[in-house]
Image (tube, rainbow, N blue to C red; front, side):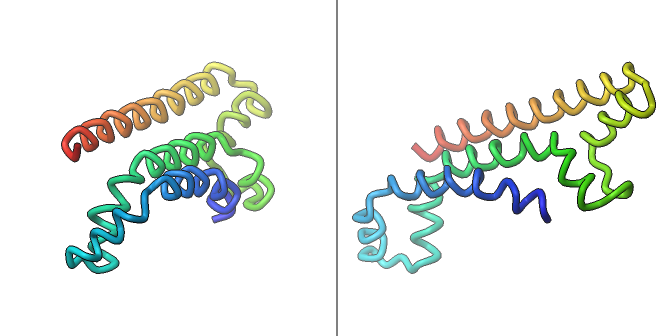
Amino acid sequence: ITVAHAWAPFAIWPICVARSRIDTRLLEAARDLGDGPVGGFVRVTLPLSVTGVVAATLIGFSPTVGEYVTPRLLGGTNGLMIANMIQIQFGKANNAPLGSALAVSAMVIVASISIAYVLLNRRFLKSRG
């Protein structure tokens, strides 16, 4: 929860910027055509701000994987995340090969998830446009 709170401002900002660029006349037109608040959000606001949502997800997700100070401070020895395991392997365990393997594995996983997310987003935007 703390890591989510720490990175929330960086995730909220791109969504706010994308939302501020939406012309309010489009929302008024959706209301005039009979859409309610939820329908207007789903049909107008969300598709027009999906780039901000993608940016927020990537900006919030990527650094969270590498977070090791916050879980260490709040969780003690029980607060283990992948970054903590990498730090332990390089520091206390003196096992650089395992630490390197964990770091490369985390980097490959984050990169593959980010690439898949961006590709799916491009496909979604092409089908909507």
